[in-house]
Image 1 (cartoon, rainbow, N blue to C red):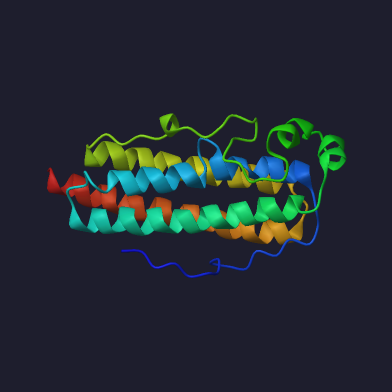
Image 2: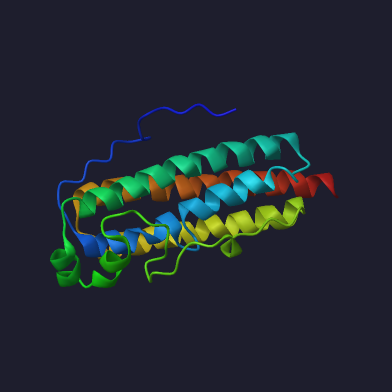
Length: 185
């Protein structure tokens, strides 16, 4: 069903190190509105979706969100590569280093580990798509927040790309919602 291509959608090449920025971006890896939750939400919801186009859309976007997870993880890894405990402490994220060192661990920026409790799958196609629309907007808002605090052009290039994909996903889910609602009128 899936084909894995060993490259990201756009290149991720971060030249500067910054564990603090990595800790913010980590929110899009394992935070409540991040890529891990999005991918699992959509790939789970597709099993209860009644519309064939809806199933295809949830599968496609859920799979794309997995590629976004790879990109976000790559950013975090590159921002922390070679950094040690003192560097993490200097940037104010020593607590993260104590628990995970340079690992990319699925958690929010505040350190809360990822949980399936942050996603929904109701087996109601309209309720699920409404959830998905909100999820895409929350992810976009988080990417906006990252862009407000980041001055790294390498990071910002990738974050802008990911933000734009959230907008496209929102549009596609809106089209599916219109389709589903027209069927019940």
